[in-house]
Image 1 (cartoon, rainbow, N blue to C red):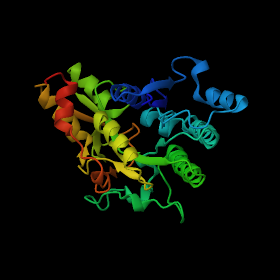
Image 2: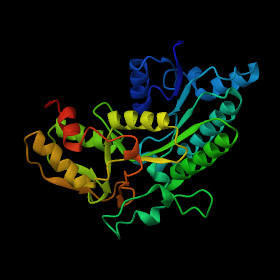
Image 3: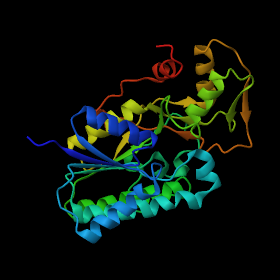
Image 4: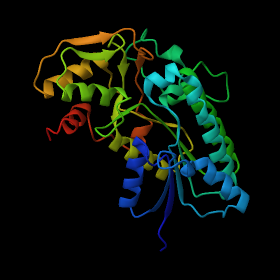
Length: 302
């Protein structure tokens, strides 16, 4: 049996690094592309070169497309035109895949694709279900330009699937891990806790709620969904609601200090309430790392 081959775009990023390691652990030969390594490693250059030379159909068993411009809430709210570059990245990947015809494309959409009208906190306790976003009807306003890029990416994924290339679409919620960039909230708060800052700052009112899912579960869950062959989009989430204030308190408790928790109302905070319904995901995968275990890992307690 030949060694399966995987292409991971954005392999120097948080998700891409973990996918690359896990796929290698599973026996894949993995090729990574990331502009962070070198401008020459921009995946778009790779796609253009392959198309100009004539892509070999079926060369790749799996394409994990993580490449995107995000940069955390500061970029999503403060520099939306930067996140719009993801449209170019996705468009060139899908155009290439239509010719290269890999065994499967795993496309990372986002919970930001869901209409923000469903994320106001008015009905706290309700979760976002996959059917809350249907591309065949009027699409509600997603979260910023970044959300629109993911809605468009899902539309392109559907068109690629129509051409006969298998595509898996997953919608991750608030992924986290100890090796994440500090432009993301979990790692930013963790850094302040490690420095034992007092007051301990959180952006926004701190009452905004998220569904935190560990990167190990993001990777394993996404691969389980891809292996299932389902053509339906699938949330990657836990269904558990935790506010930024509660997250900060949990971290401080584990670190064994009692700082004042100080909200920074002038900082970007995003939507009020974003929690996913994990029912569809649980057909294929059950998350293994709960939030407290993730905090304990991050603080080197376990």
